[in-house]
Image 1 (tube, rainbow, N blue to C red):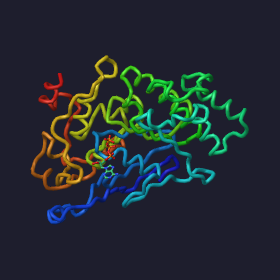
Image 2 (cartoon, rainbow, N blue to C red):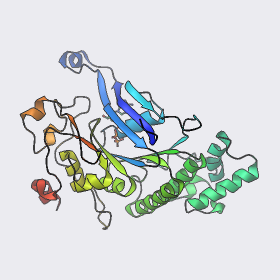
Image 3 (cartoon, helix red, strand yellow):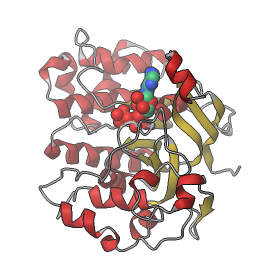
Length: 334
Ligand SMILES: Nc1ncnc2c1ncn2[C@@H]1O[C@H](COP(=O)(O)OP(=O)(O)OP(=O)(O)O)[C@@H](O)[C@H]1O
């Protein structure tokens, strides 16, 4: 542990239990459920944005809920090393759906004022209203919007309100779970720009979760890649794109849309995602990996360190820096 450590995940796993049929029990699934997060170890440093990326169902949202304390891990530990004052950091979350996360019967003032009141950050109606106005302006809305209701705003504007509400709690740590995935492509870029400016100006530490690698490339200092509950690679954003070490990372890079063009759709990733309740043996990615050998089917790959303080889990040291390593995939998506 070092002084710059903000959040530490130590061998964290989460199993969702479910009722099994007799046949299922006889078959094999000894865990009796879905191991949505499997043995994840990760450190987030002060002031850093850690991106988590992977396809739907890889366990990203489960990890977010574990880190936020909404849910306890089945095994492993999650800790926030105490700051100088010995306090736990204040945490806020921003979710994907700005429609369901705002109470339609409350005015925007009530919504944004709530965390200010709960954490006793200002007292008195005038001071609280002044802070609400300030936050609305900070997220690109206007003080007059405080009197309105959520239904009067577009999706992008509602996400701005959610961001203002999160900032109202004066968080040291922000968890963003697919904050732009429900928005139109043109609005996505505006919200990402806003979030980037806020992170820079407010020196927030954050966990940014998305299925879109192009989005974390813009937002994150470091990126963790998840596949079927496991962290398969972790590196700085620069290193991950320059020299991916795991074949799944290479496929995600090839599937990522180009944020500089109007076509920002994700390209499909080859192969079918296995059922997380019954992950493949050995390397979980072997059923989709063009480099798979017998060892991949039978043996769990070791965790290997990269030169630049990253890590990856693959039996081989493949050179994946060139996009042509998956010609079939690239021909299909061209
Ligand atoms: N409450 C739950 N009970 C049982 N299984 C669950 C529960 N929540 C998630 N799962 C399962 O755990 C796995 C991981 O889900 P999770 O939502 O964390 O993934 P994700 O990567 O965030 O996906 P998405 O982007 O679709 O939300 C999936 O197989 C999912 O079906």
